[in-house]
Amino acid sequence: MSTLAAGLPARTTRQVRLATREPILLRAGVAIVAIGFLMLFLIVPLVAIFVEALSSGLGVYLAALREPDARSAIRLTLLTAAIAVPLNMVFGVAAAWAVTRFDFRGKGILITLIDMPFAVSPVISGLIYVLLFGLHGWLGPWLKAQDIQIIFAVPGIVLATIFVTFPFVARELIPLMQSQGAEEEESALVLGASGWQTFLRVTLPNIKWALLYGVILCNARAMGEFGAVSVVSGHIRGLTNTVPLHVEILYNEYNFAAAFAVASILTLLALLTLVARSLVEWKSRRAVPKHATLPEGEP
Amino acid sequence: MATHAIIRRQSVLPGFGLSLGYTVLYLSLIVLLPLSALFLRAASISWSRFVETLADPRVLAALKLSFGAAFVAACVNALFGSVIAWVLVRYRFPGRRFIDAIVDLPFALPTAVAGIALTTLYAPSGWIGRLLEPLGLRVAYTELGVIVALTFIGLPFVVRTLQPVIEDLNPEMEEAAASLGARRYQIVRHVILPELLPALLTGFALAFARAIGEYGSVVFISGNMPNKTEILPLLIIIKLEQFDFAGATVLAVLMISISFMLLLAINYLQRLSGGRGRAGLA
Image 1 (cartoon, each protein chain N blue to C red):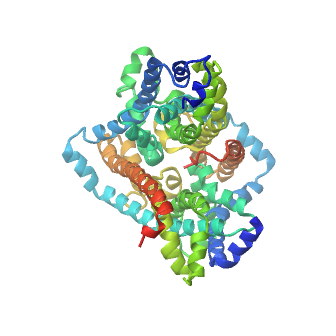
Image 2 (image 1 turned 90 degrees about the vertical axis):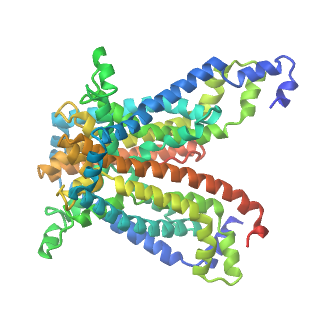
């Protein structure tokens, strides 16, 4: 740090150090502004959710979670995530493999298209399925003749959820697999491994943390999606209500304690997601140097 | 050399047909087909209908609110987000890792939950609303409430885009400027800020783009008064509920076109900042 400053007698080291960091009072002020802003916008709302949820006592809290409509909403949300997350996980791995291991024309466009769902408002994500499968949509009359209902039913909710969570896994994997390169896989193949063996024994261990993080993010969004699902659900209690929609109904009925009780499970899920994110980041940061410097130590 | 490597890679690794075929098929079924349904529907709408829908005062009011509030919120986020990113990278203090993790809360928390929490806080009887009431400041059910919700939603975009760029700043540049006699504020203004500007603009654009489309966190706190506190996505839902599919399609096409232009701008800005920063429109 001081090598440069030491050669220049015009400014003492102390003066240089003063000019490369803020004065102590300013530092304290800046830190207080930053932390104060985060407190006001993030921590206070977080605390408020749990305080409101428990404001009428633990009995009301548990009753709100045990009530049949809440249970059916939880079941539907779990079902939706159980379908949407694995599908998008398989897609993410396939897309990352295609994009990072091969060169082909239109790759840039493909990556942009994969990102598209993030650029679309959730409400529009629901609307496009209504225009496609709704009663007045393209395939609506045909679907009605076959007695298949997609909009205002579970399939529509699942489709809208798949759409909004579409890029999560691919987005985590593509930059990582790009930077890792294909040398290890090529060596495995040269040494006689089959394609699937290479994928399972070489690629998968290398990408597991990013894959896990992508899946966690995808799951959090799948379980918490509101706008898109709201458009296609039809809000039929006990049938097409997911947990976030159930929160909305309870809130609009002025049943605040119950609304926040149900919201608190979603909040716990969000907090778990943040913890998982920190763990995965920590794990992958530890994994990288080990992997890079000690290949012979690994069994 | 490079082409040689590419050709070799293409011939050695298996699964090109399978992975690309599956990617394109799944992408077409889930994203492209439904999106093209929207554009084909739009193509069947007459030009005069387009103009008529967009000239409706209620739509104009929603447009103004959606863009105005998203812009103000993105500005607030750009200002405080850069301060937060700076503090997280450059300062050491207890609880820093907790603060760093909590910045992602708006990404992870379902928007509806954020919506009801903010509304309860800023309602006239709420923890924060009660303090603002004597000052004559009303947040819940006003435009101010929309801005608060959009600020909440957009904050991580600015912080997460700036953080890696601040980490990569070369301290020798600051030392060089200092030994040449620059004062701290001059270094911040002439050395650090120009380096951060592309990332700051990217973060701003990401927060802005996300705020325009945001629905869940806003509808609770805005109160949804026609011509006053209705946002554009809500208007799409209202038109759908009235079976005005053409009207909903017009608004959706308008919004998608704007997001697409923002996406292009963001891509350009990210190229300017050398591809650093990885916060997406999550």
